[in-house]
Length: 419
Image (cartoon, rainbow, N blue to C red; front, side, top):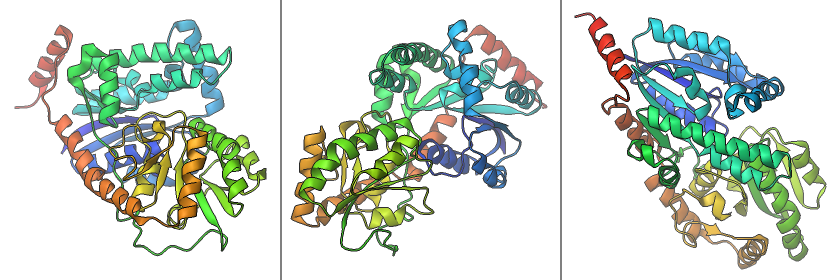
């Protein structure tokens, strides 16, 4: 069995948020074909409960504690070194030493990097095939963040966007392949990094349509006699916080004025103080972490995805579609999702549009046509088997030799193999 080094910025389990869903399914799939050596960070103490599960899929492992407060202070070094702050945030000497040891002692011929921040650990490993799963264009998200902040944070975010894009372009140029979560995301990055366009590809996220199935029986978590709008997501993620705050204050109040029995439920772990404050608004409930999100989807009247800042594919939208829910999404939330607006999900452009469409749907009664079409779309285009098959194809491609030094390293490595 071939050996593969896999570096991820956050432990790929449990698969309960966007990046961890993708990184876990990659780990699970590739463990069937490779002996995986995993290096990753733990930024939530609760995730230590899953070390055994992760180790069972790997060969050698290295788990490094990451304390966000300390990491933020460490990231400030980037201001004095001309680097994006993301790099020192995820820099650790112990992890670098472990990576060096793996590369020196194991016959690793394939390296998979998940998220641009982890590429810094293998800048010297030109003899191995290096593939990066950028997932999203992180530099663009920082630019979007900058438009919502005042100085000095707006300046810091613009700086991060500019420097991180420069780093992303360097990675794409130096590595053998660069993958993104959608064709839309990959096409945009080709425009931003035309020098690496030939290496840029994508593979879609998947949904476990058997798990997220409307045919299963779920207990109703909502009070009787009400209609419910639901948003599901990690509630310490700033884009989600911004989305529910905007929706609760600017959209839901209008809906509630006309339909006083409607409630808005915000479902997701680690709600921030700003999110918890929304529970004081009439008709708004903040659940915090729940053992299973499916009952909240199954018994909701509508699912909403009012993100104003987004990149890549929103798993929350695909999971709701798989459950045959009508999803009303912002243009940002549906970007990258192959679905027909008006037939497989609905798109609302602003607060007036959101309120109007939701009120119209609730007053007209259940409409199963869009929900059924939504699930059909997920079944057709968003299976993990189909998406990860594209990663198999990427790993099977011949290695690109980027420099004379790479050529020499590769020849030396081949010469050192036993006959």
